[in-house]
Length: 315
Image (cartoon, rainbow, N blue to C red):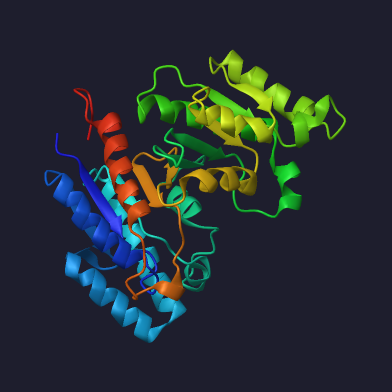
């Protein structure tokens, strides 16, 4: 079956259009059989249109116009995915304030995609199939973009169970792992040391682990943050579930910057994105590194192949 991928340009004033252009060209050189479409706000774009789009919006520098391009491109790509025209979407970086200005008051791509796909529960997974240390690292953020003071309230047993179950299903269906090994990163130092530094490990994590194991998901933990990522890099775990954004992202980007990919779990299609932002300061200057965008394309194709390219695939 011919897999079909869609790419959106992100905020046209940033590096999205240029890294998408370079990444698509390199990807097509390595595998010309993949059907790949660039989706703009008004329909499909030619590759050369990406440069024209970027130049026009950098000159205009209008946040509402740029946010509208980003949002409408994503809307069109999701429509294509939901109708079965594409199997995966790769999104270039957008600018959250511009998205808000354009009428989309969401924290980012993940929440917007969930709304457009009419999905209640989604997960934000950072995946590097190749890190600076050679081995893979995959980190699920159980809570995402919120103030640190809000994390303890948001980190409930139910949320941990729901997010880890999403991760487990994705590792099985998209990564093709028959028995995924997941480590749960603790919230408190030393996993609270038996209650000396908080009680979330006993009060919140323990019921979540009981629920997960009862449903057939043998997650491990809670494990201290200062060891769980090292253990994953050593091969003990296929993925780590981190309780909040920075504890997961600090470990992840330290070993994977340039090769990391953002994967949205729980959608009826595959979605990936590079692990960097719009980088307005270097946009259009030929300095943007397309490596992460290339990895996003490669991983999107791999995950879509695992999910859809089977004798019983419906798409």
